Amino acid sequence: MDAPLWTDEYAPAIEDLPQPDVRDYLSTARDEPLNLVLHGPKGAGKTAAARALAREAHEDPDNDLVELNVADFFDRTKKEIRNDERFEPFLAGRSRMSKRDMINHVLKESASYQPVSGRYKTVLLDNAEAIREDFQQALRRVMEQYAANTQFVIATRQPSKLIPPIRSRCFSVPVRAPDHGETATALRRVVDLAGVEYDDDGLEYLAGYGDGDLRKAVLGAQTAAAKEGAVTMSAAYETLGDIGHDDTVEAMLAAAESSDFSEARSRLDELIYDHGYGGDEILQDVLRVGRSRYDGRRLAKLYRLAGETDFDLTESTSDRVQLGHLLARMGRPADA
Image (cartoon, rainbow, N blue to C red; front, top):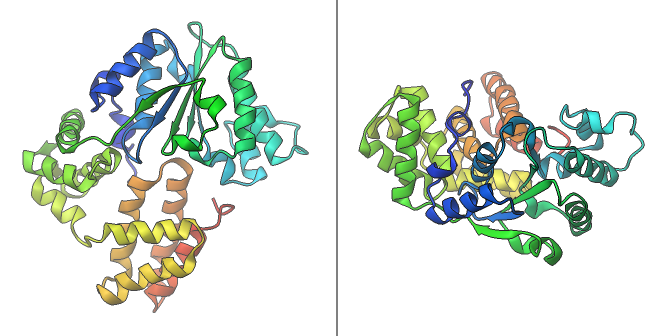
């Protein structure tokens, strides 16, 4: 999908967030800055909520919101971190640093500069459940040192993974999965802004398709609009209902990410041999599921690998070999 993602292009304001309690919590934090832990399931809107808060709290959110995805550090090599344009200014001339010191240095530098507008800035740490305990101790010290002018927002699916000193310095904001009606309402706002044709049945179908994952539902609507020109029941079903084995594709990608290639190939065999799907069909579903599962560099990596695999499928006599190769490369952190 070459167009901007609707989750970014039509990002919600605080008042547009589907969960009333989250709207109330963030309205308070907007008026009186607090450190926050936003916790809830994948796709519930934690990152969107943090960005909505920053847009309303800062006159210059582009500069006064610093986003650090934990995967940008822990899933990458030293060279990749050093060459990232966001971190390069902090790490210039520091090639001898260990990965641990690089991460600590970027975190400290990100928190230390003065806000461009107003009296404080916001540092968002996303997917924080992956932060090791020793790095959390470093984070605790940074939070203490720069408390006067930096608000920390920590987004995680597993708040229990955070050490008590960090949890005690943050206000806990549970972000539950939106229910069916809340998802349909959020979808209606997005498709209205996008100016595409839709019907209520299409929104209901997509709300069920998302099943509590709002990001998945919104990107499903965008996929239907891009392929069929509308977000109607028939368009959504034609676009999203082809394979109908999302759980299998999700499990296959999860196994590939964790380098469990035996399980990943088993799931691939299930799609090919048990259900009879061709390589092109499976690749398209991998991309569709991937759009709701990944963002940023991970999504870009998937698209790059999918493009190479698409070409290889036209030249190969074995869909299984080519798709298996894609899954193997998905499990290599250095292959970003």
